[in-house]
Length: 229
Image 1 (cartoon, rainbow, N blue to C red):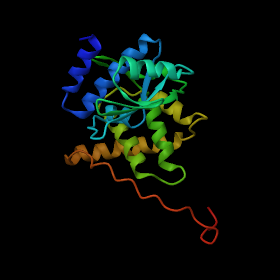
Image 2 (tube, rainbow, N blue to C red; image 1 turned 90 degrees about the horizontal axis):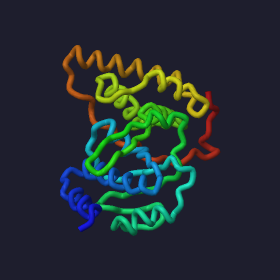
Image 3 (tube, one colour; image 1 turned 30 degrees about the horizontal axis):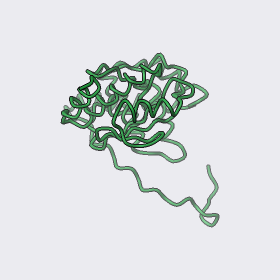
């Protein structure tokens, strides 16, 4: 058996789904690096890693630091080197849905966090940028309770030293032209700190579970539109 086959067998034996997904990402990252491609995990699975959450339905969105990732390389890694099923950007490997989502765009790629697995290094998008993303999503165009919860949870975990967060960089990113949510970020930071202090004072258990997304609503018609403030 090849070293890749050995790695696949070892990953398949991992019982916990999020840990298996992380190991799968490590193997894919290693094989992409052989092709001189650096990948970055973005979106929900990056959040799950920082938030230390179990993901019962593992799916990963991968972006690359390479401006243009040739489809040929994706096929060479996923279909030839690995026994993944799929085509072009969508693949399934060991029960994990892998989506290649284009180039990772960030002015702060140096803030990506690297997680070492037995099968390779997994690079996560910066938590500072992830929080800023959620703050934007939380208020555009309507407030989204899930995004608010996620932004505050990441802030709370950073305040509790679960992972390192550069608060100055978060403020810089949130204030930047791409986000313009600096004031909201400061408000959420204050709210999160107050809630943590209150919870510690009363020895309240951990924060409640993430709220369910609100159902999508139909856009208002002309007859129901009213002037905005």
